[in-house]
Image 1 (cartoon, rainbow, N blue to C red):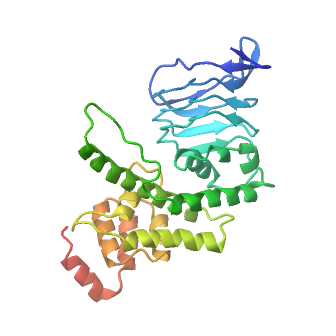
Image 2 (image 1 turned 30 degrees about the vertical axis):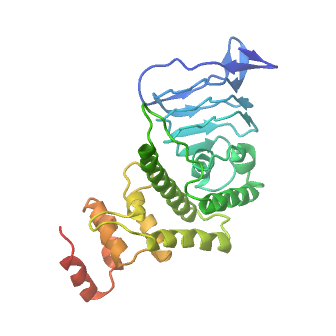
Image 3 (image 1 turned 90 degrees about the vertical axis):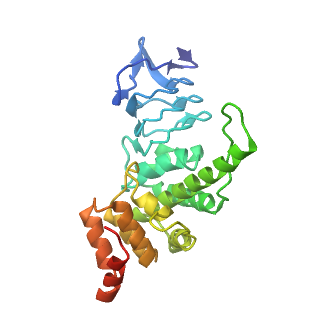
Length: 298
């Protein structure tokens, strides 16, 4: 379908499950320069999607509800995005820029976080973020957006889900779940930024570590159940879960106290020897270790 001087890729009609797809560079003899609105709406079969060079426009809802999409590959060029392009793309972890010259291993994760978790589509500027000459400025914009996201009330953005007969009691259940999910997202983004600290200034680093420490101080969970930090680090569905690097970040941020170590070890359940070994090394002294194991049921 034509649009202006270009050609829309109108609709994906593939079948199968969990594979990759590359949008063709040409259709009907014309160069593809746009992804039509709703072109991949609610597609559940793709894990990886590649957009060709020359695409300058992505229409409204183009990738919305692609709940299994994990990686998106974009051209190193400017493009215009419509509304709600990444709505409910909850598994999208990486947006890779083809031809990127910026040397930052975290950039694909930052781009994905910007448009999915923080919903800052204005940051989807591959030609700006991926260029080594302007990458530092883009990271500054990302960090300002991240700081605003961390400081915003956890209830901000809540919208009730109406299914069948809706009662006030349903709202009372939905809000706490929303807030918990929002806080977990904030923890993930703080850990992610500290893992890839390129262009991270001291003020922002202190803010991120302070946020993590604040989540630990607010910990209030029943005995034997993990807190939010534990849930995030031990989450099997998070791409970076169960890695020692995140324990080290927590330790450097003052979050690995006695209780958090206990919760983490119980959350891991002995399934990750490397992380368990690191946690044991964090215990202070033989007496502390004896007290710990005295209260831990294995």
